[in-house]
Length: 144
Image (cartoon, rainbow, N blue to C red; front, side, top):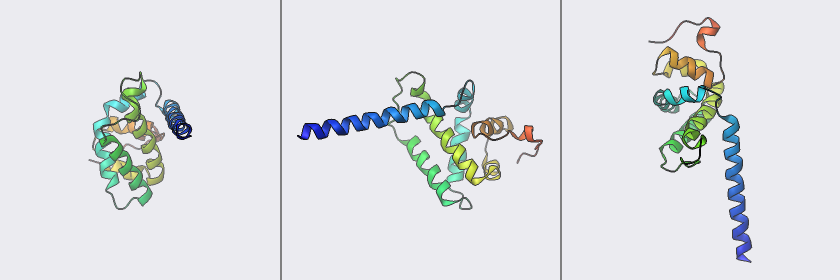
């Protein structure tokens, strides 16, 4: 009797993990964008930290960003590093998905205000978040 319950829980957890891994595979940035996301990861981490502590942003956005920072700080990954392709990229994929959601809710101006990196990195960030890069919009103004 209790084996059935334990087996049901194990199958449910494995099924949930497989669905999440499949979702991450679908949400991952395509082509060279994943490499670019990994290249600007230090700037992304500083940006996430700055945005998570900005009281002018909606509480839901700050909570979401705080949760992704907590996930990144944990030593246990959602997908172990020995899994090909997704093993090392799961952090970048999760950050890109949360960032996409946060930027759409908080606005590009908040992100631009807190971006610690270069204009080229900001263009990659805009591409990751699914926004038009500033140069494509004719917006050459970038904060110092």
